[in-house]
Structures are given as C-alpha cells and as structure tokens.
Amino acid sequence: MKHLIIGAGPSGVVAAEHIRKFDKSASITIIGDEPEAPYSRMAIPYHLIGNIKEEGTHLRHTAGHFDNLNIKIINDRVTKINSKNKSVELTSGGSESYDKLLIASGSRPVSPPIPGIGQPGVHSCWTLEDARAIAALAKPGAKVIQIGAGFIACIILEALARRDVELTVVEMEDRMVPRMMDSIAGNMIKDWCVHKKIDVFTNGQVSEIKKVDGDHTFKVSVKTPNGITELDADLVITATGVRPCTDFLEGSDLIIDDGIIVDKNMQTNVADIFAAGDVAQGKDFCTGEYTVQAIQPTAAEHGLIAAQNMVGAERAECGGTINMNVLDTMGLISCSFGLWQGVEGGESCQLVEKDKWRYLNLQFDGDVLIGATAIGHTQHVGVMRGLIQAEITLGPWKDKLLNNPLQLMSAYLACTQSAEIKS
Image (tube, rainbow, N blue to C red):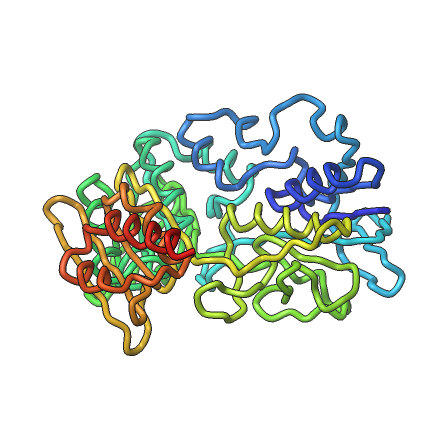
C-alpha cells in the first residue's frame, strides 16, 4: 500500500508516523514545499525571541527520525492532483502515485490589498525564511509596525517585543483578537499591551506603505477615526489571517468551500483521498456546521484519525472540533472556548476586574455551558473546556454560576460525580 501525504506540518507528520505504527510494510511519502526539515510554524516566535535555535522549531529532533521509520521526505510542490489515475504532479516536473492520499497542505498568510505591501522589507511571519528576514531587521531599537492583532499576530507581537524593538500594532477591528475575544476582553488585552509599552491602533487601517530614503526604510500611513497618522518603520510585518492552501486542487473533483469538505473519518468526497489540519473543513462540535479550525492540536488530532482510516484499521471518528484558543500575551493568559459569543435566547454572566487584569464570561444554552471567555483565570481553563465539550447538564448549578461564575470547579466536580453515580 502506497500512502502519499501532501504537507510536512504537524498533521502530515503525525499521520505518517501513525500509518507506520499501524502498517510496518507500507510505503509512506511526505511532500513538503519548503527546503526545510518538517517544522512547526507555532514555534517560529519562540525562535525569534531566542528561546530556541532554528533546529528547535523542527517537529522531530532525533537524527534520522524519518529514515528510521522508512518515511520518505520530498521537498517539492504539488501542482495538480489526478484522482482518476491516482497521481500528483510536481513543480520539478516529476510525479508521485498513491493508493491513499492525505492532503495536509495547511494554510498560507493572507496579504491585505495595501499599496506597497509587496516591497522588500515587508514580511509575513509564517515560514522559517520569513523568520530569518525578520531577525535580520528586528534589531533592538528598530521601529516595527505589525498589521493585524489576531491570535497568531499576538504570538508574533510578543516575540517582537522581546527583541526590544519599538513596536506599533494596527488592527482594523475595535479590539485585539476579535475572532477570539469579546469587546471587554479584547480591549483588556489592548490595555495590557499599552501597559507594556506597545502602541496599539484599533479601528485602524494601514492605507499605504511607502519606501523612503534616510534613517527609516518606510513611511506608513495609518487611517483611524481621528484622521491619518504617518509612522516611520524599519520593518513592516503583516499578520492579517490565513486561508487554506487549496489553489492546486483545481480539477481534482474535491468539494471545496473555505477548505476541503471532510466527513467524520477525514475522508473527502473522492475515494481514497483524505484531508486534515488547516486545509480540512470538518464538523464543528458546537454548531454542527462545517468550519476550518486552524490550530495545531486540531491538526494533530486530524492526522491521527486520518491515518487510522487510511490503513483500514478500526474506524476512527472525529466527533467535531471545539473552538479552543489559549493565548499568552506577554504574561497575560486569555482563552475562549466553544460558542463564546453565546446564542440567541441563551443566558450569560460575567465578572470584570480590570484593575486585577481578570475577566470571566460564561454563556449558557438552557442549563448547559456552551461558551466561555477568560483573562487571568488560568485555574479554570481545563474545567471550562471540560464542561463545554462534555455538554454536562448543570441543573441547579447553572443558577449558582450565574450568581458567581468563580464556582466553576465546584460545579464541574458536583455535576460529573452526579453523572458517575447515575451511570
């Protein structure tokens, strides 16, 4: 059996390793389109900070790891999939055949339509090549402008701040991390960043990036409700989101929406083709809708499930991925789970302690916790996720939480112990 995997990120690597675990004799090939060993993009900020060397971003650190597992790595780019004759075409002009194919091609940064965005010195922070370019320019005292303040952007933000640059962040929405945090939480994170000497423009939009001579490389125009602000910059970083890598799938007969539509087995609509990770659009645990969830834990879970089904072992199913975000922004821990924005007709409660940098918001549908947002309440992270993912019926504890959301641990213990007794 020949297993071919497109993508050398966490999902592809986990899948390859588990295919080998399930099938000792299978042919396994991973195709990665970067001239690097398989690595984690989420580790790049830690490399920029200096906590790890470049090799520390690699997914596996044992010398000869993939050779020892008889997993072949090809550094090339897939340009086309032919599902009729079960082969893929490569940029190099070659091709690879398969019996089972896993598409784990991940995602790529979205480049906003800003005049001057394509100039040298304007970078995303997505690849090791990007990291090398940023490290060369982000010297202590350098003026750096980061466009975007989403989840990934906030991880990059910390890495830049730790390099002692003069950092300015520009975010179009009215708060930081708008797809993860409500208005109170997102603006608390903004205030925290300002407290840490980072300039933050929310409701801001970079309208132009101009190359100039002199001490600074760029003149960046930022449009806000108060008018246009001109900023100098030695380096501009774009962190305005990502989208699934599906461009090469034209003519493949795969059903593609935002990502590749997959079922609970990570199987696509085409026989013997599976998808996993950032490129896969599967069932959302909370809503039942099909969404892309571009986080590394989901990618690894997808890879394992796909591997088990590709080898024909006991069928593995994905019960739906839960919206799950935990973020450390310069020491301030924030998180959101599930339907953190709530549902129509649902009830909610919140506890706001801005002076202590703490916030807790719980969302209910009936007597089930369906979503949560927290800042500074690290002791409740596991409990919030557990209550939401297990869809635990709270009964009288729902009203207790509405009165005091800090009783989460007591509610969890009481309700889970009650469920065990009944079973």
